[in-house]
Length: 187
Image (tube, rainbow, N blue to C red; front, side, top):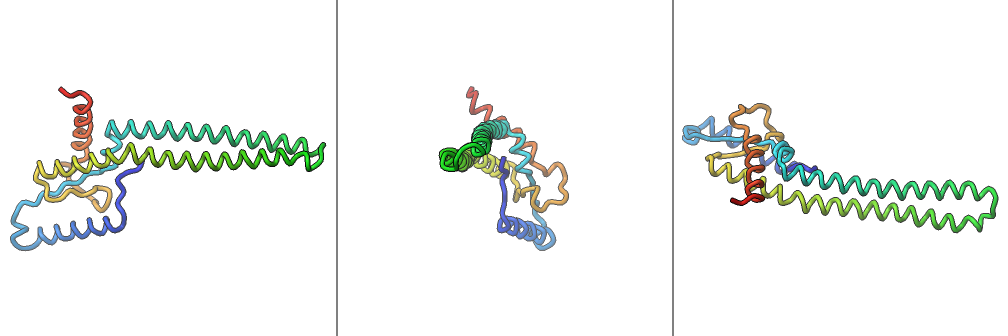
């Protein structure tokens, strides 16, 4: 499963924000006000989310189905190559041309199946996970606003230490699962 990955640009932006926050703590009137920072490990939230686990299981099953299909085609290619090896000892080269064509077609089928399958898996992953990522992002923003956090950072990026009371990971896992349960069982 793909996590919420941040690129180098986002990492630099986060580092800049943390630097500004540290500067604010150490200087002037801004440092006199309460400044509330939270951290969250989005990868752990997604691993703990029931909805994300279902999506991962669906993707894993689709990947296994593709793998079995590819293995079947590869086995057919091997069988044709073995047949060609055995028959070319006893017949003219012109007579093995049909087998060569059949092998080539199976190899092309394998390649096409692999490419189409990978594209379908990526499309399915996007379809299943984008709403979950959006839901997590919305939930982080909601928690940030509701609980008056000034900044919420991705724990895996640059955090070396954080007190557990500032770690929102488990709270967000619980909220995501509760939110999904309420969507399924409206009262």
